[in-house]
Image (tube, helix red, strand yellow):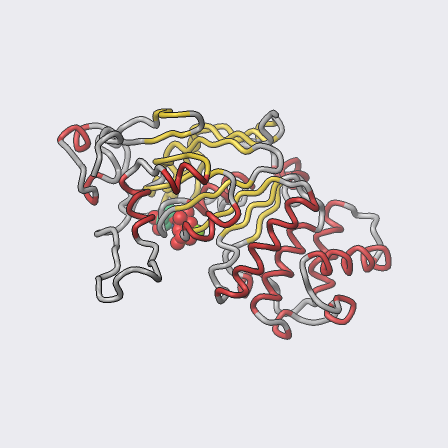
Length: 326
Ligand SMILES: Nc1ncnc2c1ncn2[C@@H]1O[C@H](COP(=O)(O)OP(=O)(O)OP(=O)(O)O)[C@@H](O)[C@H]1O
Ligand SMILES: [Mg+2]
């Protein structure tokens, strides 16, 4: 089936007073209808910047999409005028932000916040008409007794309930694509599992595609069909969730995998971590972005950037030494 979203060679840079940060520096990926794509990588590798670029929620004063195509159902979003983009945002592509405590307004009730979003795409809708739809929406995201919670303020809800309200807001206009940016990071593990399960159910109920952003491979494994691993503003490995877990090829993906603690392992052994930090390299890039932290790095890696190469059906890797056994 045709892709509902195609992102090609996306470059988004932040221009601060002192320097330019090439947060996203040539990212390609596609999304099929009803597919769940995971975007993983350490803090600072550019995941949120990719998501914000796709929905056009960037601060144009200091952030610029330097190049690239963002095709939603074949329409180019990069460069689209803000009025038309507003028509797509929320209805075509909707986003759940990283932190519900910051994203919900403390001074409006749950009803008002969802009604506002519905009205943006359906200006004629009255409060009475919206009420029934909002109750159903809250029910679908697993809020008990929604008719009683409708007039609550966010501070009257638990963290998990607030995240469910955020999801309800994102679903209010029945989007084709839902982008969930770390939707479970602020939640404890039990609620995290419930929210992930909910997202999976909602994908089927609303027949939407999803991009799930997380730094946690275990979260991604539980619901995604395909995964893009990002490092330093680029995709370093892309594969089905099975290949990523069974045959990871990039040393960074392997490192992420080895960092997942095991309950059966030796408790006295030190937990594995990838040494060093994500480094944003200013263009032109003349080395592998991961080479300083990579135990496999050779002279070739320090002299040029490896391309993203297809190594099997749907499996792409950006590494010169991808076939070397460790
Ligand atoms: N407004 C900004 N101005 C300047 N630099 C920024 C800005 N926002 C993000 N950055 C930088 O861009 C890079 C990518 O940031 P981004 O927030 O996209 O990463 P992320 O992968 O979402 O990280 P996290 O997992 O912590 O959310 C980082 O180096 C970050 O410091
Ligand atoms: Mg982020």
